[in-house]
Image (cartoon, rainbow over all chains, first blue to last red; front, side, top):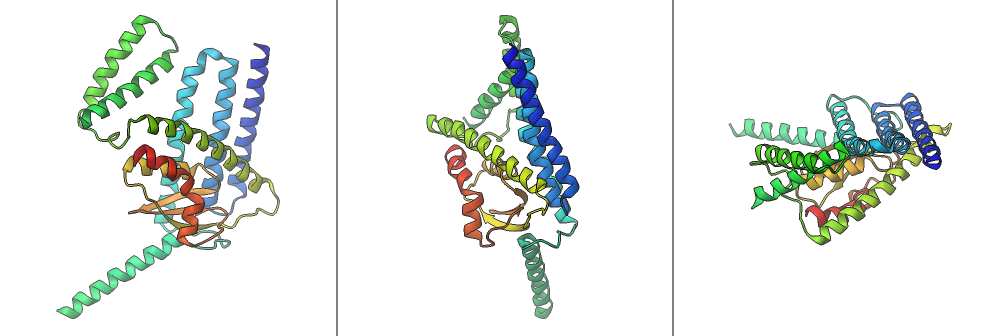
Length: 125
Length: 165
């Protein structure tokens, strides 16, 4: 019983450290996408560890905590993906350190193709 | 047959959630949960095809368990990786959006794959167009499609291919 309490407390502490690092990352990173990266990852493992620690201190809550962990693991990446996609869709710029942006390239290519098609159709008339 | 498989999977998910929430194995509780799981899954999964792609074979089951272990290891690795990048004073990032190809055909398999990619070291799925995934990578090592695919997708794909096809 004592050992479980101590392990739970340590796990909760490690989890809160990860959540703190995630918050620090949101503050330090240069653009939206990198902020989403640090935010998602740190908060997922941090929340999981914190919940596991609480579950060890109160063994009766085990089932509910398992469900919470599963829901967090399923919903967290979906929300971060949707945020990143919306950000790219409304052309929020990437940081100047960025090496490559294939998505922008493919969008530009698609637009050029559409323009070419339109011109060809005009020429046909 | 297809809708029956959906029904069975839905029923087991609901029933397991019911047992976990109540956290006990009393007969009355089990009967109540059993009846309501059957009613709920026959109402809501009457014509759904969400779970049609799951293969219910022993091999798929073993691969699911292996996949969960691989996923947890990757999750822990990714957290230490990101934590290191956040703490180090020079902020060692080299970000960019790369394109990778996936071999998976089913919707469910692709969803699990993109979710796993989002939760693993320094990668975030931004968009899917047909079979190309666009991934924001915090530390771009290569811009070639084949090499990026090998680095990011392959180690999940080999499990998911068996489970979902």
